[in-house]
Length: 142
Picture 1: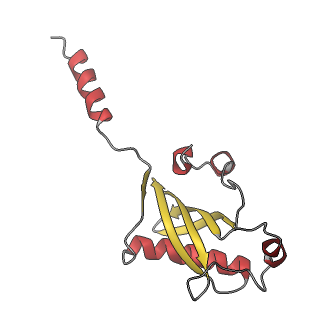
Picture 2: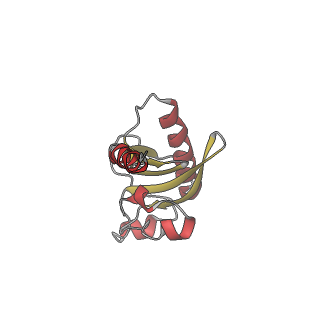
């Protein structure tokens, strides 16, 4: 009975049809997952900038207990955030800060924690995050 080749072919076919572990999606705004991720991101942004900011989450990429969040930073009127009165005010006035946000989060138990974030990056600030923090490169499309 030589069923090993059939088993291996079957396993190969099953693995070819399985979705990738990293799935990019925008969670529903009323989902518990979205609210948990958003709360961590907003808290991290407010802590760094020292003031309230609207964080408009664009994408969330998940891989196991890791999440990569991209967002736009806005003022209360839905316009691009201006960084007035923040540590980034001078750099923003000189054009060196964007309204983008990128955050790396990790699920610890049942709570998301902020590993690192890039507020207003003008380049791909997360390029070294896989090697620096041990996050899967697939989170970032690498």
